[in-house]
Amino acid sequence: MPFRPILVLGAGRSSGYLIRYLAQHSAVLECELIVADQDLDHAQAKIEGLPNCRAVALDPLAQPEILDALVKESVVVISLLPVSLHMQVAMSCLKNKVSLFTASYQSGEMEALAPDIKANGLLFLNECGCDPGLDHMTALQIMDRLRDAGHSILSYEGYTGGLVAPVSDDNPWHYKFSWNPRNVVLAGQSGPAVYWQNNQIEIIPYPRLFRAVQPLELTGHRDLVGYFNRNSLPYRALYGLEQADTVIRGTLRHRDFCLAWFPLAYLGLNVDTNLPKEPLKWPTATELTKILGAELHYSLEETQKVIELWAFLGFWDPAVVDAYATNPAQNLEQRMVERMSLGAMDRDMVVMCHRIRSKDHDGRVVDHRSELVLEGEGGENSAMAQTVGWPLAMAVECYLKGQVQETGLQRPLAPHWYQPILKGLDALGITSRETQVMP
Figure 1 (tube, rainbow, N blue to C red):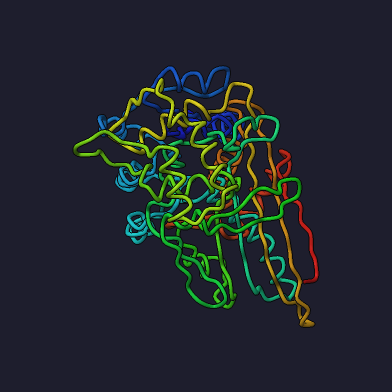
Figure 2: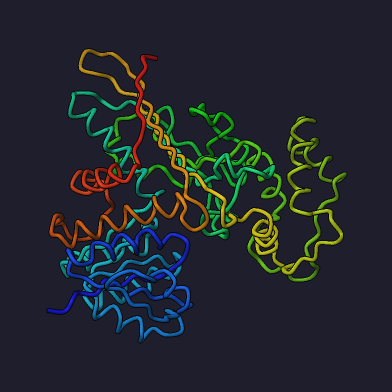
């Protein structure tokens, strides 16, 4: 009997650990991996030396008929493509009655397909990577355990960041790209940050969310701050926190990163648009100093730090030639990628923390802290690739082994998802450190 195909769409930064995990378990799962990417050489490099794998060239936009044919022969599809392509993949999966797994946020467009997904007996699992994904699972493991012990959850805050490990932290931004640079440059531009705090909705408009950061005292990492991320309100119901007074989800960055990013965003220097007339003009250092002081109310020390960080990107270096002088976002991305990419020996770091306040059955209030810090092995063997790829691979493994029976549009929020996945990650050395204090 031939092995069943698992179609992996995309052989980018986050795919390596997922591909290796599923290939190493392919005999037990009675599956083969088809790894499809625009760059065939790239896909072949990812499967080199692995059993039951083959690589194919695929451009989904230009070759929808090839995408359809690959989906049709598959038992499950894993999409690691850009978010903009997920709906094309989802429609093909729905048409060909094949289940779909992604690590990306569940979109409104995808939610519109929920009745059809359910009616066809399919499973579309989203938000099963690092953030979103592992953050859901580690938070709910704690909160479900507390609820089972008779606690009520009073508040929840969770923050995750893909950062650079201290051993490779050699630039003033304290940042290097371990995932898609475009997503970093455009972060927050989809709308204001919306969250629940002190029993009311709070809204921080873009770009002020990079100034209204939350200082976080994390073990060994005291210079990290959290900025509020997207819309936290849906997670009140998803996490079962309708009675909690605070629900916040955020992103971790070094405080200097946010300090310098706010004026960049404030001046529109990361907007993804083509300027109609003149090439992009950066403010001079003197002009920036005036803006930071008079308009943004930065202190002298903060202003000097911003000048240092902007200078690192070559904003006032006449020798730097802008390849994308008419598109601010592309221009900024180019500058950052040239100076802030992970080298072959550089190590990234994923930091994830949860702050949960509960009340036990005796009325005592307890603060719970959970911290996960994971450093990568260097280059593409990154902590980000591990924390995106392994949870997604393990979810597919659970599905193919028949350990999960549910269908429809899902996130990995239930114990039948997070228990086996977190157990598997723990065996691989990815685990959280938990502490409790009485406030």
